[in-house]
Length: 295
Length: 157
Image 1 (cartoon, chains in turn red, green):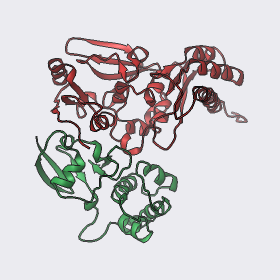
Image 2 (tube, helix red, strand yellow):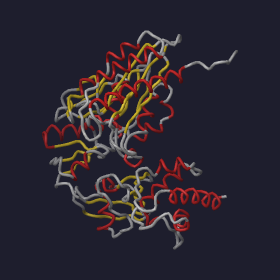
Image 3 (cartoon, chains in turn green, yellow):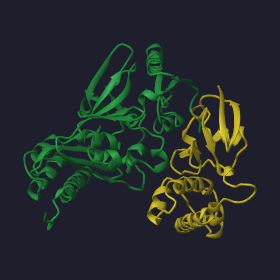
Image 4 (cartoon, chains in turn cyan, red):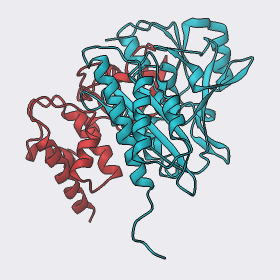
């Protein structure tokens, strides 16, 4: 299978990529890891006239950790986050999500930002980064804007990205306490898209009270969804079974899945409830101070 | 577009259309047919090669994206006519039946052993989870990789 013919520009700088986009209009498409775009082009679902390759731009590689938070460059690959032990202390959810994406070979190539821009409703990063309260930086030749991820994700395969814009960075605020996060995924086979994906992230203060909570859902709506009522129910309380059950029920209500060959609407909703409960219980166990240890 | 790629240690040049996929550059332009086209949809891993020492599915990389990079294919495994320990272990353990998936399995396993010289069976299975085999099952493949790891440790030792 071959993509339809297209032109190709390997951008030498971000400004060059932005200039090409401004000149070419909607026929031009950014190429990063290509693990979603190239398969779509081979199936002729996508037929861009021009690809603007940014995958080697040094300005977009790697990440920066500051007192405010973490900024991921646009061409950070899934496998980099899977292996980034230095990020586990403050951003444990990243590595625990990355390991669920596709398979090791795809993770070596695909990018986190590319996955967000692709906006597959079953994509794992949408759910995880919503749970982390992430925002995205969008740049064109003439402007730079920052959008909360919740506003960036619009609908199925649709984002707020304009044809002349590039998603250049993902920002994750630094947690205001000890963070705990995990990702749970129901897939039909290893490496598949999520039937249901649930990201849970909580930040505890010194007294084990939840001060920040994020719950993101994949595969159960036209885009990745947050579960704000469930998040609110957790804040201000210790992470314990009554509150966990309530949050799980609220998260299931936030889900809006469709029935398909992978499961009925009711089944998927129930998986959300079970996964939120299971995930939060796991985080509670992880966060519990070790019993029987005395100074 | 003119591109230059170092393939199995040898610098090679080609003039390709942007839509040429890396696997077809290797097979049809360079004649290296050891790398197989399987599903052609980023699932099966038969086309796995090392791009700058990282295993990737070469049906889902454009040849122009490999410009200036180095590629290692299954043909690059043997040295001076001697099979790589991974290749002999696959042979000894019957880690293949039809052999279609084998080049991809070998390249993914090579990358695993470079990072993790003494992998646990679960690590081997995880590293090969992007490579599908439809005849032997995976038991003998996993055993072959584990044995190759031991052979390589002895060679170094």
